[in-house]
Amino acid sequence: MTDVRAADPSEVDTVVTILAEAFQDDPMSRWVFPDGERRRAVAHPAFFRELLGAGFATGHVDVTADLSAAVIWLPGGGADDGPIAGLDPAETDRLGVLLGLMAAVEPAGPLWHAQFIGVRPGRQRRGVGERLLRHGLARADAEGLPAYLEASSPDSTRLYRRLGFRDHGPAFHPPGGPPMQPMRRAPA
View (cartoon, rainbow, N blue to C red):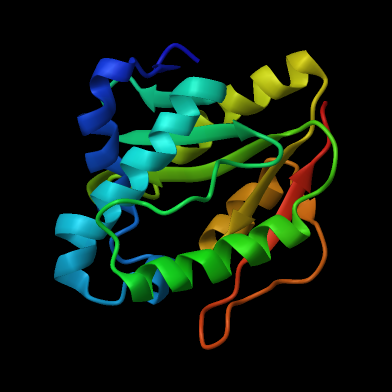
């Protein structure tokens, strides 16, 4: 997959922008960060910058060559879920609820967790996310490790099933929030 490569830590601002654009209208992002302008200008940049720090330190951050998409892969067990500078108390509380639910359903054992797979809005539904995800899945397969993620929409659930992911238990949702479907893929 020559159009997918490891992101360089010097590209953190670009990757933050890719993910912030991709998830601006995501149902779970709207629940955690309900104010659309604040989500765009403050919350998403703070949140994704923090997660990218963990991705560069302990996992993988992959991008497409044209910088239209990015994914953060973390080893099982996730990132440190301490406070994130820039989030207000209500955002921090909602994020804590979501992260607690996610941690409770993540499979035990070594695995690679695709935390966020984001494609810029103008490039969505063109196979870009699939190519990006296949790159990381090939790496997980080479290591003999399963992959795990949570689908936040029916479209992403269909894509992940095509790539070999299967439901890992029932969908979950925070109180008043949208559902997320935990999904696991055995190594090929």
